[in-house]
Image (cartoon, rainbow, N blue to C red; front, side, top):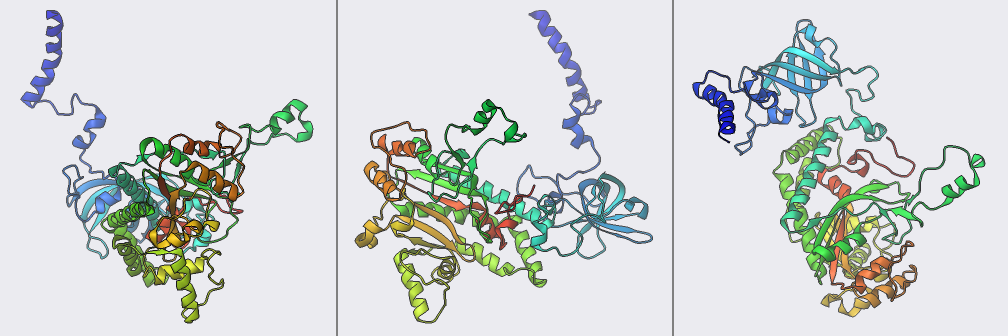
Length: 545
């Protein structure tokens, strides 16, 4: 043991003595990856947003700002390049901010530079004598990382319509505003995650492949293995039988909602949520619909009042809007909308966008019964305040034009909850209304709500779930779903027997909601078409990349 300790001391002593004497570099015995920032004379910001941030973040771990005259290296893409006889200017961006760095180069260093070229440039960071930027980079070294054929590049330096850019989903995210939408999605995802964690919700990952159609509308994609690569006429009988057999034993589908599975999980840990892809085989060709989109869904156990569910929706969206108001993403969205308004490219001005966010922050939001909403629509028509293509009716549901008018009039340009819809137009799983104001019609309405916002219309839908076994079975039969025996269990044939089992074995009052995440991004960004906030949108007859 003594010899072992002596050896250990001899191994350690040179490092200690070297460090104490100060004769050895602090990097001498450390890994190169750890010491590179300390030993390098070149400042390399992690991205351009860090470099161009007007004020350092209030944190001891925040990256420092470069000093005037300091050498630094940046990575990015050439947005524009302007070459003169004795000098060249290149605007370099990397998607982390709408701003670009002005790089000043000698003409020989600008050779090979064109819009879209990926580069690493090194130079001195000095105050800029020109307008539009406080500093510029006097470049002394250029390294081209990725060539770009500027003549053939589909996205030229000119205004491109949204319709044209949708044909290039793999390239359009490189445009500054599209990069901003990606950062908005990330920010909102982070904020809802923080909100739910703070309020003790458990994040879950429900399945994408399901055995049932949650909404009962039949607009589902059926899951099946790929077809054989050879013609059916060349298949043997055995091969043909294998191909014809159901992979899962019975038809399965891409999920249209995670609600039913989240209901099961909520009865394990009380409060759950998920942000996951959802699929609808709708042939809608509108600015609000996609075949694949993301849904933010949550379920709360031991809740017997739909107002509690609405409180969660309101508080969560208020939290998201508050974060956006104080973020760099929010500031850049307003700046982008102000520029677009000057060029008459957007119907949503930066003023309107800021009002949207403040409308989410302010509250409480109005909560109006469906009956009162329909009467409001009829009164507006009778008073010649508005004309509708479809006349509002109690059992006809609300058309998009109705929802838009309600958001503008009853919501005063902000969010408004519509509650207690007729049972006949809602899914089987919703519980009957218990609100005292709807007591006389409780048997014909359900404890549910839709959240309407201007332009987007329906953003959130939620309800109390029917937790009583006999009532649920009756509702399923009334809606024409498969007959379910009250004393059987374990069905795996695609029926909702497993969902009924949740009521058979210790069910509790519970409720939940689903929020169209991509629609929320449209509302927060002022983008009018949902296809332009999704990187690779899928809709009827279109599934590029």
